[in-house]
Length: 140
Image (cartoon, rainbow, N blue to C red; front, side):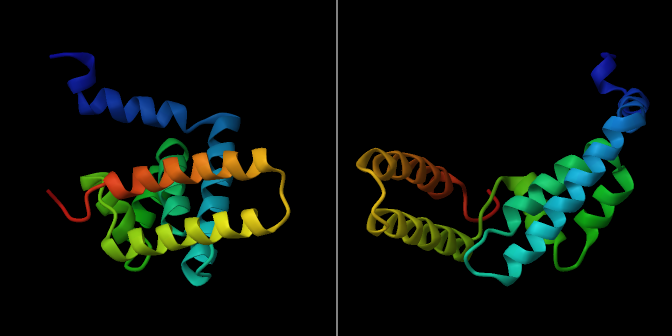
């Protein structure tokens, strides 16, 4: 049996990583991400799920109890669980993300930004759009 296959070793590594100052940094980052995720779920101009996914990753390193809370939360957890399980983005979320990216590019374009800023924004937004579009919409 490899060391990676032993759940007790994995639990011990998680517990060891969750001690000291790093634990508090992971917890703080997770809490900030949860806050931003909640704001993002309320405001249509900001993504919420991305921050909740980051919060779960932070909590996995700082507090398995808070990670479990987030994953089992009836409103916040399902999208994070779906992402972890399938890497899936629901069709409505893809549409909202695409609309948000398009709106961002329009705002940058009409804001009087220099051409290099518009081009850079277009390249980065295009890369993000391609990533979102190529994720599965449902469980495979």
